[in-house]
Image (cartoon, rainbow, N blue to C red; front, side, top):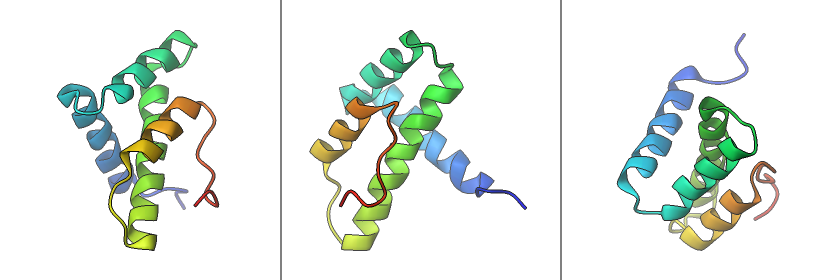
Length: 88
């Protein structure tokens, strides 16, 4: 049995790619480049950012709230430390 849903992972990685291409949240590209400079592969860096995307989506749904860009950016800046599931 797989530990993750491959379709969900693909969608989250597409969201990361879209954010990197759009430049709408510049900290996404800054984080991506920083993680690579710290020795992660492009794939690993995207997966770490995708983990932050997934966490933010979880809390948006759980708490019925709007996307919190400030909280998202703070979590990006903490990478490679992954978001804490109990942080909200």
